[in-house]
Image (tube, rainbow, N blue to C red):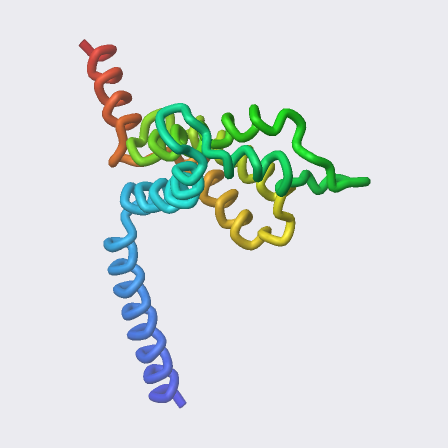
Amino acid sequence: MAAESRTTAGSSGRLAFLIDKASGAIRTIAQPSLVQLVVRLALAVPFWRSGILKWDGFLQLSDTAVTLFTDEFMLHLPGGPYPFPAPQVFAFLSGSAEIILPILLVLGLASRFAALGLLLMTAVVQLTVPDGWPIHLTWAAMALAIMAWGPGRFSLDWLLGQAARRRTNL
């Protein structure tokens, strides 16, 4: 009986050791700053891709973008759906945000504010395309992660923060 207990204890001890080693290897691969960079890039891509389709040139909205906000996109609110108010304004603001905010995220500049902007855009997209909630939930989770934990070391925000800390310590 005692030998059986030692064998069981030894097996569970080896299993715990292997699990600890595997967890350590995973933590080595998934460094927080690398994860934060990947999350920023993953959130930036779909908005950037949508944004570039809304422009025909510098500050020249495509006819398709305006048509979408005028004729196709509707806000699915109680008692609706309702058309977008001021569709040209919404098309311009949407197209601008979908270019500017992803650039800020990729650079890691004003990252928390850029993520907040994309979270708000995600909410509007959800009201416009309610069946897209699985992907919208993913975008919201990424935006919230950036807002909560910041952009990480691979960002201009981090570099600027380091420079500011050095100046205050002098």
